[in-house]
Amino acid sequence: MIAVLGAGSWGTALAIVLADNGHDVRLWGQRQEQMDEINEKHTNEKYLPNIHLPEAIVGYVDLVKALEGIETVVLAVPTKAIRDVLQRVRTCIERPITIVSVSKGIEPDTHKRISEIIEEEMGERLQDVVVLSGPSHAEEVSLRHPTTVAVSSKNMDAAERIQDLFMNHQYFRVYTNPDLIGVEIGGALKNIIALAAGITDGLGYGDNAKAALMTRGLAEMARLGSRLGANPLTFAGLTGIGDLIVTCTSVHSRNWRAGNMLGKGYALDDVLANMGMVVEGVRTTKAAYQLAKKMNVDMPITNALYDVLFNGKDVKSAVDSLMARGKTSELEDLANISL
Ligand SMILES: NC(=O)c1ccc[n+]([C@@H]2O[C@H](COP(=O)([O-])OP(=O)(O)OC[C@H]3O[C@@H](n4cnc5c(N)ncnc54)[C@H](O)[C@@H]3O)[C@@H](O)[C@H]2O)c1
Ligand SMILES: O=P(O)(O)OC[C@H](O)CO
Figure 1 (cartoon, rainbow, N blue to C red):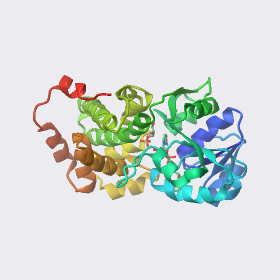
Figure 2 (tube, protein in one colour):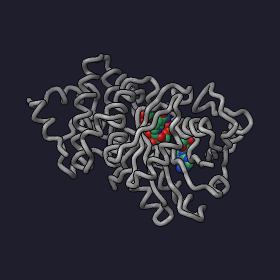
Figure 3 (cartoon, rainbow, N blue to C red):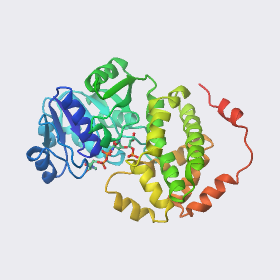
């Protein structure tokens, strides 16, 4: 029996994988009406339209009941809600639990990765934290389309247990990667670049601009990541370039879609209000901008996006200012990203 906390698109899609693998799943959400829909109609239309959920997935609004006797919890709420949810979880459990973190973000101001927030909030009530990340849109996972992800943890035995839990040889392939920092930083920072790629698409700039953003975006992701202790090779893997590709190019991506609307001239508040789902890249841009300043790491795309999101800079001028920068040697720049 596994509990999945967060009945949005990703929590529900991962509940399907677990149910397909033969597990009973308690899917916890806050809205009674939505949990009734899951239990009576076996659907979650707002988040995964036209998908029939396995009956092994049972919706719960009562967190105490959802967690009763549970040893493994999948945490699938937006980064902003994680502390709040964990403070409630802590009071509901009797024994330490393993938490599988599937959210992607960095906390503004504290600059903590999600596994660090989980450790801080759970203290001795945490057995292990395992991060699951990679190129994986809920919409395609719920259709059982082939998908690959990676799991990471300070305790790789725990990561391997979670690999076995989720591995589905028909459609969900799970790799391990011991580089916890790299896995978390890649998953968080790719959302910034996807917002920027959406903006250039919204401006009608086409494929050259997007390829440039993805390539130079990956360089700045790896530059900050390696300064934080990540292995640069992880950025060449599923949780780096893999997730960057899917998020910058898929119509399913909330971050790309939000950027696209910004590029077309809509205001940020209107874009977020219309999305109805979390756009993690906005908060992560603030966190990465602060972190890059603190650590003296050059992140021009992140800085330009920060100006658009938080200083009201016009999107076209932001792109113009990126293009107007001084000359750089590509190979020298990449050679500076080191282990
Ligand atoms: N959707 C995807 O394809 C996908 C894939 C990989 C990772 N992720 C990550 O998973 C996380 C969740 O994303 P999502 O797409 O499922 O978001 P979503 O917007 O579809 O759903 C989020 C859910 O969390 C709930 N929630 C929000 N605040 C809450 C709170 N305080 N307490 C309890 N529940 C709360 C919402 O009601 C909603 O049901 C994000 O960090 C995202 O980056 C998403
Ligand atoms: O829809 P997005 O932009 O939040 O991206 C979802 C996943 O992170 C893609 O791997």
